[in-house]
Image (cartoon, rainbow, N blue to C red):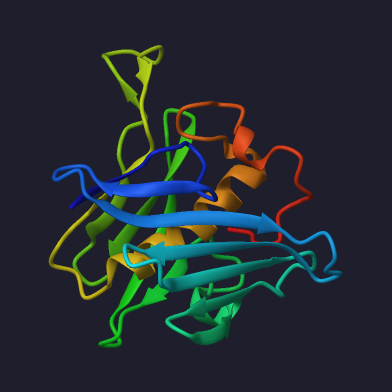
Length: 194
């Protein structure tokens, strides 16, 4: 399945099925000026408008929370690092199998890839951000190619991708269609690190 974000922001967008064109999810972010602990809340809603995922981005590193299908988790428990010094994050499927989100560098730019560690096959990856045969190719929308035979649900893949893509941008890697990473502009330092 190929899904695309209708804006370049992982925090505020509509996600559609690129093949069928159908509306799948809405992503919205609200900043919380009154809270002393939460910078913003990003909500993932399905086609029916039901909240399937919520990310509370905390001011204090390590205090982010995820609500996934009505269950609250600390982000560090729901999407833990493989080890203390690792840049790999683990995403666990309902059947207990683990998948690894990795930050991949290619020709000076970084992108995210979800790998099945047993087969080393890519389960989900960001599609190329530019069309044309050169670096100066025409920008296009951020897309994610997801294999249909994975034990993970699309909403778990999307919610984890939103968190990690925003962390990638806040750490200076930039957006996929704009090297300056405007989506993270004006925010404090990252609360999530790779």
